[in-house]
Image (cartoon, rainbow, N blue to C red; front, side, top):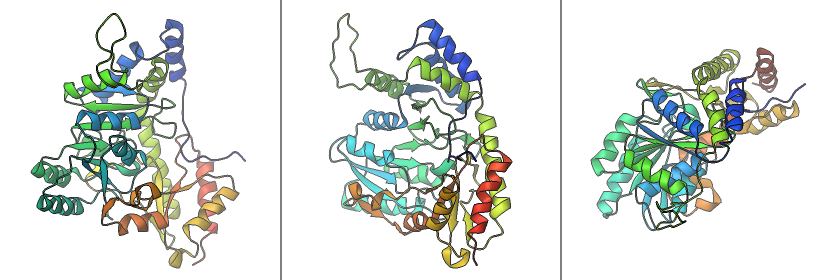
Length: 375
C-alpha cells in the first residue's frame, strides 16, 4: 500500500497553468507580475492592506523583528509550544527569548501567564520589546486578553500565523491581530509555494521597508549601492504563481482539513485515553493537523508505541512540537510556566491530515490506532 504522509503538498492543476504563464513570460526570478498578484490576492482574502511575499515564513518573522527595531540585549516574549523558527529569529537579532507556556484549553499562549510576566518585568524596570504569539496547529490564540495586556505595556505583537492561514478569531482571519502577521507556505502547510512565506500589515511603512531589505537593500541608484545591510529574502515569480493557484482553493482546503478532523473524532473519540486538541469557542481552526493526546494509563499504549505502530504500516505521524524551553539551544532562557507544554509534548501525536486523503486512508490510520488500544 502507498505511504500516507503527514501533510503533503496538494496541487490540482490550476497551479500548473499559472506556472506555465510565468515560464512563458520569462519572469522566473524574484519580483514579477505573479508576485504582485499573490500579495494583492492575499490582502483581499484576509482583509489586510499590505503584504510582501518572501522566501520563507522564517524570513517574514525576521523582517518583522527588524521593522520593530529589535536588537542585541532586547527581550522578546514568545510562545513556548511552537516550531523553532519562532524563537530562532529572536537570536538572529541578538535578542533574548522569554517563553510563555500554553493555556491548556487552547494550547496557545496563556494570556494569564503573559500578564504575570509583563507585570514582573515592569517591576524590574525592563519590559520586553515585542511578543511573538503563535497560532498553533491552525488555531488562533485568544487575542482579546493578549492584545489588551500588551497594549497596557506598549508591547507590539507579531502574530506567527504560519500554521493558521484560513483560521478565524471572532470572525476575523488569522494574521490580523498584531502590528504584523506572518504566514508560511512550506510544503506541509495548508497552501504551499514549495517554500515561501508572507509578511502582512496595515502599516505600509513596515511593508515598504521589509520589501527594501528583502531585496538586498539596494539604494535607488544606477549602480549597486547599499547603505543598509540587506537580505535575499524575496519569493520568485515562479513560486508566486503556484501560490496563487493554491490560495484560490484555500476555502476548499480548510473544509477538507476540518472534515478529516471530524472523521478522526468520530472514529477515535470513543476510546478511553484519547483526547483531541480542543477547538476554542471563539473561532474556527483550519485544522492544519489533527492532533491527539494519549493517556497510556487509560489507553494501554503510550504515544511512542502508537507512532511506531503507524510507521510499521507506512503511515507518517509525529510528536507535537517540543517546547522551546526544553530545546538544548534555548536551555538557559527564561520560561513562565512550562508544565502544560511539557505534558502536551509527552502525550501529543500529530496524525496524517493531507487534503488528498481518502476515506480508505483514514480507515488505515484509525485501524492501527484502535489496534493499539489495550484498556
